[in-house]
Amino acid sequence: MSSSFRLGRDGIYRCDAFQRFVWQEHGFGTRSANPRVDITLRQVHSDCVVNANGSSGDREEEGDALITDQTGKAIGVRTADCVPILLLDAKNRAIAAVHAGWRGSAAEIARRTLEKMKSAFGTNPADVHAAMGPSIRVCCYEVGEEVAARFSSLFPEWANEDKVTRRINLPEANRRLLIAGGLPAEQIFDLGLCTTCQTAQFYSYRREPENPGRLVSSILRLA
Image (cartoon, rainbow, N blue to C red; front, side, top):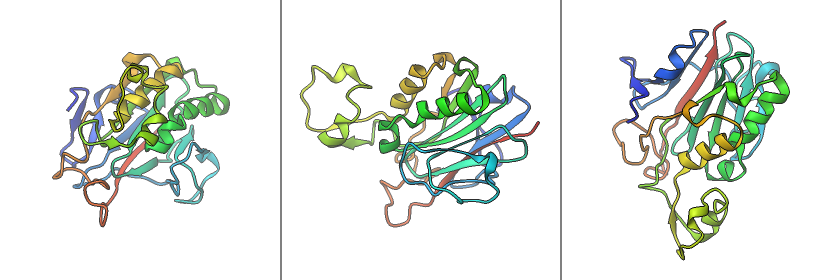
């Protein structure tokens, strides 16, 4: 586990780097507990980013990322192997919650979320901090050639390797997308825990496709 995160007594992981921003609260859920969430989406593994400022209820719209600059509105995503990403704009106090499975990652949803925050709230990516929660890791995520091909531009080091199957590092793919979108590398934090390996703590669709459960990751602007 990354030293940038800690597990609270309430069973929820939090990013230490986010804690200094006292105007927000956030969390990454486990089997034991989930953080508060008011608004989520009907997730469809897309690159669709929804502005939650106009939302009043849960799962009203389809999409895979939520943004808001309103207070008192906890936005979140549900995952069971996909990468949950929480973003905060330290200057404008805008926030985002992103669900990045392989399809969303290949469609660059993390970078599109930054673009939407910029157009909606004037966010400068240089002011954004990102935290990535529990997800399937390279140790457990072997994919076929067709899926791997969607990530070849993100992993140019594959160019000289001739492989039919590959292990994809989804958090690293999203880290590279965030950096390409203007985030400083030192403002990106990764929990580093694998949902598929860590049976006791996390749900995993790959490990338990019949009844995987879901982990909630959410962020709330308090003031």
